[in-house]
Image (cartoon, rainbow, N blue to C red):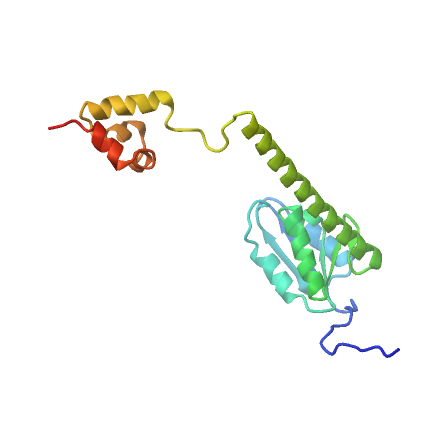
Length: 210
């Protein structure tokens, strides 16, 4: 049987390129040197290490992005610890998946995570499948909980602003001659909250006759 090879298909990456390192600390009083020293011990040349001081909650990480851009097919991105690279497990999976698509490996020193090995790559795909499974369970539990709440007559969403008491207050004050703006300003709201509840016809019926 003749085997047809696709011309555009890329061969599996051979991770024989550079080791590119990334190190991050959250505050200026922390020392990034410990991480960079560990990266050098792992074989990363000091000229190939990108480092920065960025809080873990911030999405923008310029040096990390430069490290990702710097990686070429066959290279391996190395970090001291998984949480240095991403703000969440979902973000981490996305970054590593993008690297794999580009033929770039990923290694974390502390956790021993290494996608350049068959076992490490298998573990990565297992973690991705588990994360997707967990997201599905959370979504299902949320839908079931909302359905049960609706069946019990529980109102979902933001608290209702126009309670029965407030609606009665508005009608009384409006019939007494106060304008919509005057009333809602005492509540710290805009007139739109009234117009989204009452039709112009109803307001005209309540408006005092001059």
